[in-house]
Length: 274
Image 1 (cartoon, rainbow, N blue to C red):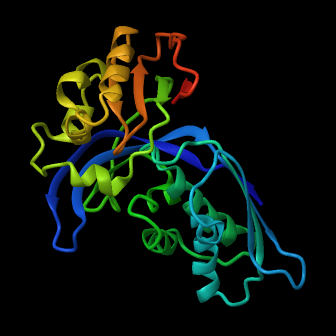
Image 2 (cartoon, rainbow, N blue to C red):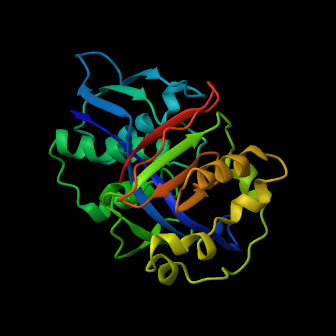
Image 3 (cartoon, one colour):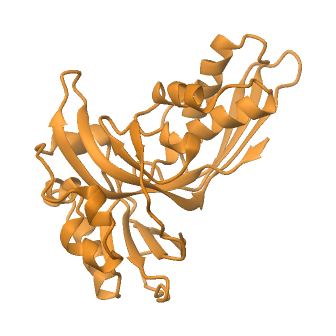
């Protein structure tokens, strides 16, 4: 079974408090982004163990502990009838970019396995499995705009229609680890209610919707603010860091074409329509 795990954008991101378990409570809107990897899961030939073949962008770490493998083995523990699998992942979406690329791969591995082998797992149970693999992994099970809270794994529906909005995502080839990003931040209450701010026209978001990581990461990574300013200079109605970085995106109203901008050769750039 071949599926295409998509990235996500954060519209606003507020780190509101540190939790007793060492994690942080956040508030953010997650938005699916049609920038995808390619993932295929097949039954392995008789006598062969579960394996994964990785192509495309390099993925650090041991392939045997890749999130797609972990997702398959998580289901296998509860469904022993599952045979070993051959997993193929072609990585396109950058990791360590705040785009949820690894989490999406894991969630789509869960969904594909459920469908391929007719396991009959409910959406709610798939989300429960996904939460065991990553805080934002559960978002990609239903894969629709939500207001995310607590660790980023508790969702409320949100009425948000950005269909036709132009989008440009710039990844400056910086891997910012999530623990590093959180270590630099001081939790605080948001200045504006996110749901109410996003209900206003796109052109107003610049003054009311922000990402707490931008300020905390600025001293170590000044290029992030530079990219954001370039997007605004090119006419973006709204620009922001996504997640804890390092991808920065700009949004243009549906009636405005996304301009072609020149970036360093080491950058990865995606542009399209939401």
